[in-house]
Length: 289
Image 1 (cartoon, rainbow, N blue to C red):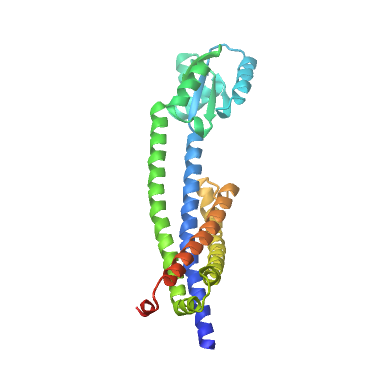
Image 2: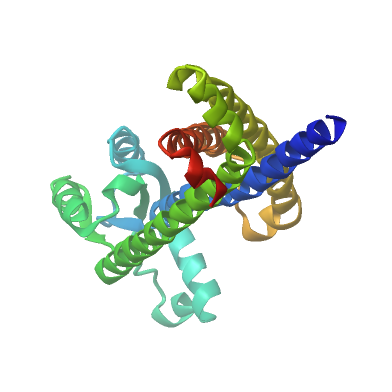
Protein backbone atom coordinates (compact mmCIF):
# COMPACT_ATOMS: atom_id res chain seq x y z
CA UNK A 1 0.00 0.00 0.00
CA UNK A 2 2.79 2.38 0.99
CA UNK A 3 4.60 1.48 -2.20
CA UNK A 4 1.49 2.35 -4.21
CA UNK A 5 1.19 5.69 -2.46
CA UNK A 6 4.89 6.35 -2.99
CA UNK A 7 4.52 5.45 -6.66
CA UNK A 8 1.52 7.77 -6.96
CA UNK A 9 3.45 10.64 -5.39
CA UNK A 10 6.40 9.93 -7.66
CA UNK A 11 4.13 9.98 -10.71
CA UNK A 12 2.58 13.25 -9.50
CA UNK A 13 6.00 14.88 -9.07
CA UNK A 14 7.30 13.65 -12.43
CA UNK A 15 4.20 14.81 -14.32
CA UNK A 16 4.30 18.20 -12.56
CA UNK A 17 7.96 18.68 -13.49
CA UNK A 18 7.21 17.66 -17.09
CA UNK A 19 4.34 20.16 -17.28
CA UNK A 20 6.60 22.85 -15.76
CA UNK A 21 9.26 22.34 -18.44
CA UNK A 22 6.68 22.45 -21.23
CA UNK A 23 5.07 25.59 -19.83
CA UNK A 24 8.47 27.26 -19.64
CA UNK A 25 8.69 26.85 -23.42
CA UNK A 26 5.18 28.33 -23.78
CA UNK A 27 6.06 31.26 -21.48
CA UNK A 28 9.34 31.93 -23.27
CA UNK A 29 7.52 31.94 -26.59
CA UNK A 30 4.89 34.41 -25.33
CA UNK A 31 7.64 36.61 -23.89
CA UNK A 32 9.57 36.62 -27.18
CA UNK A 33 6.43 37.37 -29.21
CA UNK A 34 5.46 40.27 -26.97
CA UNK A 35 8.97 41.71 -26.95
CA UNK A 36 9.25 41.32 -30.71
CA UNK A 37 6.36 43.75 -30.96
CA UNK A 38 7.91 46.05 -28.36
CA UNK A 39 11.21 46.05 -30.27
CA UNK A 40 9.35 46.69 -33.53
CA UNK A 41 7.50 49.64 -31.95
CA UNK A 42 10.80 50.94 -30.54
CA UNK A 43 12.37 50.86 -34.01
CA UNK A 44 9.33 52.54 -35.59
CA UNK A 45 9.39 55.32 -32.98
CA UNK A 46 12.91 56.12 -34.17
CA UNK A 47 11.69 56.86 -37.69
CA UNK A 48 12.01 60.62 -37.98
CA UNK A 49 10.13 63.16 -40.07
CA UNK A 50 12.18 66.31 -40.63
CA UNK A 51 10.03 69.45 -40.89
CA UNK A 52 12.28 72.11 -42.44
CA UNK A 53 11.31 75.66 -41.48
CA UNK A 54 11.53 78.68 -43.76
CA UNK A 55 14.57 80.92 -43.26
CA UNK A 56 14.26 83.95 -40.99
CA UNK A 57 11.18 82.58 -39.25
CA UNK A 58 10.81 83.97 -35.74
CA UNK A 59 11.83 81.45 -33.06
CA UNK A 60 8.69 82.17 -31.06
CA UNK A 61 6.60 81.20 -34.08
CA UNK A 62 8.60 77.97 -34.52
CA UNK A 63 8.05 77.10 -30.85
CA UNK A 64 4.34 77.80 -31.22
CA UNK A 65 4.10 75.42 -34.21
CA UNK A 66 6.12 72.79 -32.31
CA UNK A 67 3.62 72.92 -29.44
CA UNK A 68 0.77 72.47 -31.91
CA UNK A 69 2.52 69.47 -33.48
CA UNK A 70 3.06 67.97 -30.02
CA UNK A 71 -0.72 67.81 -29.59
CA UNK A 72 -1.26 65.89 -32.84
CA UNK A 73 -2.16 62.21 -32.51
CA UNK A 74 0.75 61.08 -34.70
CA UNK A 75 3.48 62.82 -32.68
CA UNK A 76 5.43 60.76 -30.15
CA UNK A 77 8.06 63.45 -29.52
CA UNK A 78 9.53 66.51 -31.20
CA UNK A 79 12.86 68.29 -31.20
CA UNK A 80 13.54 71.85 -32.37
CA UNK A 81 16.90 72.17 -34.12
CA UNK A 82 18.21 75.70 -34.69
CA UNK A 83 20.35 76.74 -37.66
CA UNK A 84 23.38 76.89 -35.40
CA UNK A 85 22.74 73.42 -33.96
CA UNK A 86 22.19 72.01 -37.46
CA UNK A 87 25.55 73.46 -38.57
CA UNK A 88 27.31 72.07 -35.51
CA UNK A 89 25.81 68.59 -36.09
CA UNK A 90 26.90 68.74 -39.75
CA UNK A 91 30.45 69.63 -38.78
CA UNK A 92 30.67 66.73 -36.34
CA UNK A 93 29.26 64.22 -38.85
CA UNK A 94 31.24 65.38 -41.91
CA UNK A 95 34.35 66.71 -40.18
CA UNK A 96 34.33 69.89 -42.30
CA UNK A 97 33.77 73.51 -41.36
CA UNK A 98 31.69 74.59 -44.36
CA UNK A 99 30.84 77.96 -42.76
CA UNK A 100 34.44 79.12 -43.02
CA UNK A 101 34.35 78.33 -46.74
CA UNK A 102 30.90 79.69 -47.57
CA UNK A 103 31.14 82.56 -45.09
CA UNK A 104 27.53 81.80 -44.16
CA UNK A 105 25.26 79.12 -42.76
CA UNK A 106 22.94 77.87 -45.52
CA UNK A 107 21.16 75.36 -43.28
CA UNK A 108 17.62 75.99 -42.13
CA UNK A 109 16.03 75.43 -38.72
CA UNK A 110 13.87 72.34 -38.38
CA UNK A 111 11.56 70.34 -36.15
CA UNK A 112 12.36 66.64 -35.94
CA UNK A 113 9.26 64.56 -35.29
CA UNK A 114 9.17 61.01 -33.90
CA UNK A 115 5.93 59.20 -34.67
CA UNK A 116 3.79 56.74 -32.77
CA UNK A 117 4.36 53.23 -34.24
CA UNK A 118 0.85 52.96 -35.70
CA UNK A 119 1.65 55.90 -38.03
CA UNK A 120 5.02 54.53 -39.15
CA UNK A 121 3.89 53.43 -42.59
CA UNK A 122 4.05 55.15 -45.97
CA UNK A 123 0.28 55.63 -46.31
CA UNK A 124 -0.01 57.43 -42.98
CA UNK A 125 3.21 59.35 -43.60
CA UNK A 126 1.89 60.63 -46.93
CA UNK A 127 -1.14 62.10 -45.16
CA UNK A 128 1.05 63.52 -42.39
CA UNK A 129 3.37 65.08 -44.97
CA UNK A 130 0.42 66.73 -46.72
CA UNK A 131 -0.81 68.06 -43.38
CA UNK A 132 2.62 69.44 -42.46
CA UNK A 133 3.14 71.13 -45.83
CA UNK A 134 -0.04 73.09 -45.22
CA UNK A 135 1.60 74.98 -42.34
CA UNK A 136 2.72 78.48 -43.41
CA UNK A 137 6.24 78.41 -41.97
CA UNK A 138 7.11 74.94 -43.34
CA UNK A 139 9.64 74.99 -46.17
CA UNK A 140 9.88 71.23 -46.82
CA UNK A 141 9.22 67.81 -45.26
CA UNK A 142 11.67 64.90 -45.44
CA UNK A 143 11.50 61.23 -44.41
CA UNK A 144 13.05 58.04 -45.79
CA UNK A 145 10.29 56.18 -47.62
CA UNK A 146 12.49 53.18 -48.44
CA UNK A 147 13.54 52.84 -44.79
CA UNK A 148 9.92 52.94 -43.58
CA UNK A 149 8.89 50.33 -46.15
CA UNK A 150 11.84 48.08 -45.26
CA UNK A 151 11.15 48.25 -41.51
CA UNK A 152 7.48 47.37 -41.97
CA UNK A 153 8.23 44.52 -44.37
CA UNK A 154 10.86 43.04 -42.05
CA UNK A 155 8.52 43.38 -39.06
CA UNK A 156 5.77 41.59 -41.01
CA UNK A 157 8.04 38.72 -42.02
CA UNK A 158 9.43 38.31 -38.50
CA UNK A 159 5.91 38.29 -37.04
CA UNK A 160 4.75 35.61 -39.49
CA UNK A 161 7.83 33.50 -38.72
CA UNK A 162 7.22 33.81 -34.97
CA UNK A 163 3.53 32.88 -35.38
CA UNK A 164 4.47 29.79 -37.38
CA UNK A 165 6.98 28.74 -34.70
CA UNK A 166 4.37 29.51 -32.01
CA UNK A 167 1.80 27.26 -33.67
CA UNK A 168 4.28 24.37 -33.90
CA UNK A 169 5.48 24.80 -30.31
CA UNK A 170 1.92 25.02 -28.98
CA UNK A 171 1.07 21.78 -30.76
CA UNK A 172 4.18 20.12 -29.33
CA UNK A 173 3.37 21.51 -25.87
CA UNK A 174 -0.17 20.17 -25.98
CA UNK A 175 1.08 16.76 -27.13
CA UNK A 176 3.69 16.56 -24.36
CA UNK A 177 1.25 17.61 -21.63
CA UNK A 178 -1.37 15.21 -22.97
CA UNK A 179 1.09 12.32 -22.98
CA UNK A 180 2.29 13.19 -19.47
CA UNK A 181 -1.24 13.20 -18.05
CA UNK A 182 -2.22 10.18 -20.13
CA UNK A 183 0.52 8.12 -18.45
CA UNK A 184 -0.79 9.20 -15.06
CA UNK A 185 -4.35 8.15 -16.00
CA UNK A 186 -3.12 4.95 -17.64
CA UNK A 187 -1.68 3.75 -14.31
CA UNK A 188 -5.20 3.92 -12.86
CA UNK A 189 -7.18 2.65 -15.82
CA UNK A 190 -8.45 -0.41 -13.92
CA UNK A 191 -9.72 1.84 -11.12
CA UNK A 192 -11.65 3.86 -13.70
CA UNK A 193 -13.23 0.74 -15.18
CA UNK A 194 -14.03 -0.70 -11.73
CA UNK A 195 -15.84 2.50 -10.73
CA UNK A 196 -17.73 2.41 -14.02
CA UNK A 197 -18.76 -1.22 -13.51
CA UNK A 198 -20.23 -0.52 -10.06
CA UNK A 199 -22.43 2.21 -11.54
CA UNK A 200 -20.45 5.41 -11.00
CA UNK A 201 -21.31 8.16 -13.45
CA UNK A 202 -18.66 9.43 -15.90
CA UNK A 203 -18.65 12.87 -14.28
CA UNK A 204 -18.07 11.38 -10.82
CA UNK A 205 -15.24 9.18 -12.12
CA UNK A 206 -13.57 11.98 -14.04
CA UNK A 207 -13.81 14.62 -11.29
CA UNK A 208 -10.75 13.59 -9.21
CA UNK A 209 -8.63 13.11 -12.33
CA UNK A 210 -9.67 16.52 -13.68
CA UNK A 211 -9.12 18.33 -10.38
CA UNK A 212 -5.75 16.62 -9.93
CA UNK A 213 -4.70 17.62 -13.44
CA UNK A 214 -5.83 21.20 -12.89
CA UNK A 215 -3.71 21.38 -9.73
CA UNK A 216 -0.74 19.88 -11.56
CA UNK A 217 -1.18 22.41 -14.33
CA UNK A 218 -1.51 25.28 -11.86
CA UNK A 219 1.53 24.25 -9.80
CA UNK A 220 3.51 23.60 -12.97
CA UNK A 221 2.55 27.08 -14.22
CA UNK A 222 3.67 28.70 -10.95
CA UNK A 223 7.02 26.90 -11.07
CA UNK A 224 7.44 27.79 -14.75
CA UNK A 225 6.69 31.47 -14.05
CA UNK A 226 9.19 31.57 -11.17
CA UNK A 227 11.93 30.12 -13.39
CA UNK A 228 11.01 32.39 -16.31
CA UNK A 229 10.99 35.51 -14.14
CA UNK A 230 14.37 34.53 -12.70
CA UNK A 231 15.69 34.20 -16.26
CA UNK A 232 14.21 37.56 -17.28
CA UNK A 233 15.73 39.30 -14.25
CA UNK A 234 19.06 37.76 -15.21
CA UNK A 235 18.74 39.07 -18.78
CA UNK A 236 17.81 42.53 -17.56
CA UNK A 237 20.67 42.64 -15.11
CA UNK A 238 23.38 41.44 -17.52
CA UNK A 239 22.16 42.44 -21.00
CA UNK A 240 19.42 45.05 -20.57
CA UNK A 241 21.82 47.97 -20.39
CA UNK A 242 23.97 46.64 -23.21
CA UNK A 243 20.95 46.33 -25.52
CA UNK A 244 19.37 49.52 -24.13
CA UNK A 245 16.18 47.56 -23.73
CA UNK A 246 13.89 47.08 -20.72
CA UNK A 247 12.86 43.41 -20.43
CA UNK A 248 10.85 44.09 -17.26
CA UNK A 249 7.88 45.90 -18.77
CA UNK A 250 4.90 45.37 -16.48
CA UNK A 251 2.35 44.68 -19.23
CA UNK A 252 4.59 42.10 -20.92
CA UNK A 253 5.32 40.30 -17.64
CA UNK A 254 1.62 40.19 -16.65
CA UNK A 255 0.55 38.81 -20.05
CA UNK A 256 3.30 36.17 -19.95
CA UNK A 257 2.42 35.05 -16.41
CA UNK A 258 -1.32 34.95 -17.19
CA UNK A 259 -0.72 33.04 -20.45
CA UNK A 260 1.39 30.39 -18.71
CA UNK A 261 -1.21 29.89 -15.96
CA UNK A 262 -4.08 29.75 -18.47
CA UNK A 263 -2.23 27.29 -20.72
CA UNK A 264 -1.22 25.12 -17.76
CA UNK A 265 -4.78 24.82 -16.47
CA UNK A 266 -6.60 24.57 -19.82
CA UNK A 267 -4.21 22.10 -21.46
CA UNK A 268 -4.04 19.92 -18.36
CA UNK A 269 -7.82 19.91 -17.95
CA UNK A 270 -8.47 19.11 -21.60
CA UNK A 271 -5.78 16.44 -21.71
CA UNK A 272 -7.13 14.75 -18.56
CA UNK A 273 -10.66 14.72 -19.93
CA UNK A 274 -9.52 13.13 -23.21
CA UNK A 275 -7.54 10.46 -21.36
CA UNK A 276 -10.30 9.58 -18.89
CA UNK A 277 -12.93 9.46 -21.59
CA UNK A 278 -10.73 7.16 -23.63
CA UNK A 279 -10.70 4.53 -20.85
CA UNK A 280 -14.37 5.03 -20.05
CA UNK A 281 -15.16 4.05 -23.64
CA UNK A 282 -12.87 1.01 -23.67
CA UNK A 283 -13.96 -2.55 -23.11
CA UNK A 284 -12.53 -4.29 -20.03
CA UNK A 285 -10.50 -6.71 -22.18
CA UNK A 286 -8.90 -3.80 -24.03
CA UNK A 287 -7.36 -2.48 -20.82
CA UNK A 288 -4.78 -5.27 -20.87
CA UNK A 289 -3.46 -4.20 -24.28
